[in-house]
Image (cartoon, rainbow, N blue to C red; front, side, top):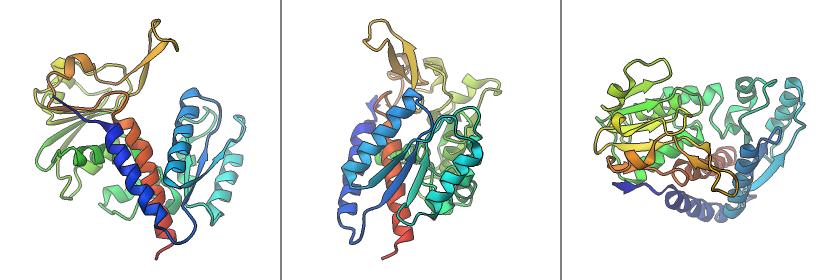
Length: 291
């Protein structure tokens, strides 16, 4: 079993981006990070994105609207950011409070600043194999992890557990693209799938993105499979100072001995998501400021 070290791979990408940003002749790229509310995970994620941007040399503007902001008011804020020529990328941190329509908010971001890749135009470009758009940061991070770990997808069977807009749907589309790093046969499973273990046991590459702690067990994995664990779940643990521990969607202890390669949680997909957001921000800057 080989552990896929997301921290190491992400650090390599951050170093590449730092060098690229340092070489830019004009102002540095700028990303607006919009966080509504005080969800602890969101606070942590935005802070990490802010820190990584600073390390690379990307400017970040953290915008904290009141948690009671209306849909119309949030639209007006996004419109201001869309029109601001000093901002290259916009990310609205998910999840949003229940009274806000998250999908509508993602659509409101102008496509050329949609560095989280969740708007209609950029999702559509994935389906069209169009590289001019922005790929969602977690799906892009998964594909980068596989590529930099020497995992070739062509002709192999990829099984995705989960059909979310954030991960499942876009990563399935990416894996089946007519590209040298893709060309996989893809099966997408979800909460209504029958005979799930029989399907997951067929996977050469298993991507677990279902949001259920340690859901994937050893009996669901083919020996030698590559296992990508996207889940981040908090499980109560009285022995920890904070009262919980982080686990993935895969039962690591039982699955790891079977797997050919596997990502840990934490330290697998998570660091890649932030690195790919910064890569998208640099791409947005370059598209808006061609040399």
